[in-house]
Amino acid sequence: TSYSLPPFEVTFDWGVFLETSVLPFVLLVGINWFALARKMRLTPLQFLRHDLKKARKSTRFNIPEKLPFSSRFRIRVFLRNKGNFFTLFLGIMLASLLLVWGFCIMPTMNGYCDSLKDAQPAEHIYTLKTQVEIDGSDSDREAWAAAMEYRDKVDQTKADEDELGKMVAEYWLAHSEYASLLGLDASKTDAKMPSDYGYSNETYGNLTVGELGKLFEKIGDLDTDDENLHPVNSAKLSQSTIDQAEKIAVTTVKIPRRYADSDEEVTVYGIQENSKYWTEFSVAGLKQGQVVVGTGVTEKCAIDVNSEFSAEAMFTNDTYTFDPVESWGPETNLNIYMSIDDFRKIFDEDDDYFNGYISNDDLQIDNVYLARDTTPKDLEAVGEEMNSIMSKMVGIIVFLAVAIYLIMMYLLTKVIVDRSARSISYMKVFGYKQREINRLYINAVTATVFVSLLVSIPAIILGVDWLMKIAMADYAGNIVAITPMIELVKTFAIGFATYILVAYIDVRHIRKVPMAVALKVQE
Image 1 (cartoon, rainbow, N blue to C red):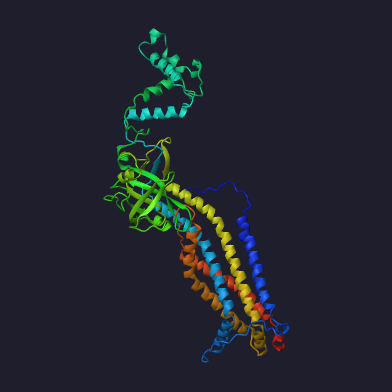
Image 2 (image 1 turned 180 degrees about the vertical axis):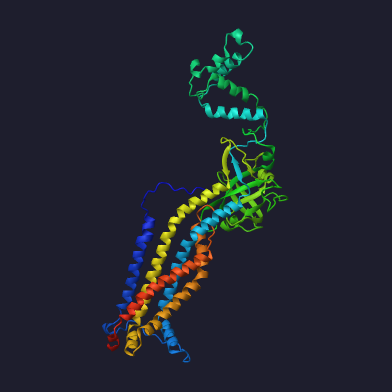
């Protein structure tokens, strides 16, 4: 998977514009119109008396008289403003959710990459463009190296067999025992270019006749009549390196995702029954169609062990049915495992088919045969790239969360203080000190904020996990949210620190409430 970002281009999207600009405006106008329409039914006298609410039966809560006055007063403040306190709780939970989301991005990405590396059973997993053997004689390696060099350098679409035949024939004759009889000089013939025969040098890769002749000499050692003939890699490996490598078969299928109307690309591995690399489970003895599935497949694609599921080929309409007998690996493992013999039968391949190797040693596969070499370093590079992208989002999310904290707490606590302005004024008239008034009102809000921050933590953990699944539903891979305890502590600390700032503002607001409010006539 590549997380490289293309050049940034700004484009206008009507859907985004409607959702982020038009819809909020329509909701704002609609809610205000509905509220005003209800209030306009009231009479002018009701407005003058501030009788703006429909009379409801009072449900007075009897507070035990044994409690101290300050405790009973705080409870009254809480009950009188329970709607505002509930809204405050929801706002704190929303801001905390956003803050934890921002803080858990980096641990989640790091955990995802570490999990990918842990699921890598070897230092190298090679995926091949074509079957290639790593064990062969020196002559086989030279012959196949020559064949690949010829294929790479000579333009196969323009090369002519008769032209090649003429140049190669002269090379052979110049190096034969009949060269002197034919008046041919080997060194001069070897130095000739195709243009000396009236042919295009570019078509034949600017190779001399001598170079072309040597290539065909080596290619001639191949037994082209052998139907099971496979290319041989050019690198000469030690026998121990050859012995520790295992042939595998690899393909990709599509499986519907749980939370998205799209398909997950899942890698299917055909492995040796007694593999030296996949040792934590075994495919030996599995019946045809029975497989071991990665834990990530069960979660991302809603697959249950011992319950058959279907998968579709990537580029055809072929459908395959698998019976998972076991799940294995971390939650990021999106692979399916079966025996290589079963793989060949299910995907209708030859009895000796393979298209990959797994090895702890570097097999030095030629690039012409190699599709991909997956190593732990590659996975580290993916992690670094993801971290560099995601880290820039953390600051933005934290800033938004703190802004929501600040605005929500300030507005709601200000409403509570404003609604209690007459009571605050009475207390000033009765001789209560500023510190005592602050304790009665601010402490009730402080307790609510403190409890809200604590109580919301379990819901936040579940919410972040659910949001991660939904947000990443259309992306490749199974990324699971990780919420370290330290991030929850940081969230609590930031939330409470923000409230302390708001409380300071509220204290100043309470101090400014005049005693004259208590003397005003209230009808």
